[in-house]
Length: 511
Image 1 (cartoon, one colour):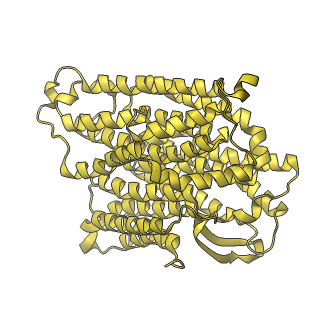
Image 2: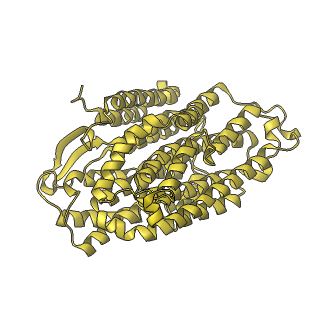
Image 3: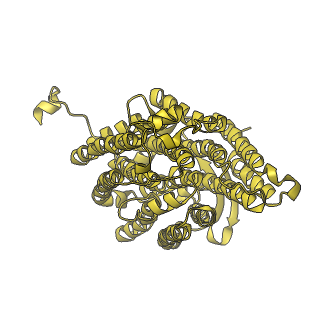
């Protein structure tokens, strides 16, 4: 089945599900949730089948590829394919969508069009996520990059909290600004690219001979858009508002999956297409990444809103990811790619478990809790494990990726790695302080009789906890898929890992 259009099929399945929901007859309106979940599970099964077709040792950059002429006058193609990095991100998205749909079961209790549209928008979002990670044509990537804004805008603006309109518009304005800057760079690529049929293919734009200043300007256009999407300091301010006002399931897809488009784009487009400019900008980007790590962690410590705290932790984690990418070492870049996946699962668990607590207590404020481990011990235990994953406890998923990022960064930028390590200490503070304030202490009398995790909620958290343990103890299968793509990217950039120096070696003694 090597010629089967796996990626197109994976993207079309949730889109068909969204159309079914949109035109669902009134007599079946109460089945909207089950239908949405069913289509997402089918998409997951096809994703697993596609992943099994992927050959980690292949010499091809992209596998499961499809190429069709789309707008030949401009050299635009419908071109999709995946390397190891894109594959693991698509698998992560395919797992998180059914988890989020199950978690959002009661988000819109009114049976009818409003509920149908809510779940349809989440399925449409899945289609765009698959498209943006699999696009190997720059223009097609841009189309998916901008199209993702539509379902997210309506998911926040129509179904979010009290300040949902403000949060949705702020998210849209930031994202559109980044997208428009990138569009200028895309147009410049068209003007100075190879032209002809399929002229926007990533493969044809790799190694392009550009004027130095022009290449740096185009790099800046792409990087700015990806920094907004990631988000990095100082263009991060839309994230806390959007994540706090969005429904928890929407926040998971926004922070856990969509924001990875920014860091994925840095690897796929910034490093690969603009290697000289990437090396030129690296010192500034390393500084911004370290600031993001420390700034996000420090602000998280001072938050009293649970959702806002989790959002700020993500800014810190994205700083780690960018740090590993621009360290430009095989260890650091592989760690960043794995970090993207691990952060998706960790953030999903934190947001969804926090939402379960909020639904029971009726408040997002941390001071309104206290002693809840005596009321809902299983829920408190899951919350603690999720927090331990966020603070990179050895044995859980985030530890491996964070360790690789710091080791890879230390090979080139020792001061940045040491400062980044402080982010681990701050993570312990914001996670353990939050848990202490919310879960420890005397049993609150007002919470007596509050139920612990339901069967549906256990199905929500079970795959996430399983991902923590599997990726924590045995990350090798994921790294085996990621490493060839990382090695190939560093070849495009023209960098090699620094030679190890040890005081005991002859080289170290000479130095």
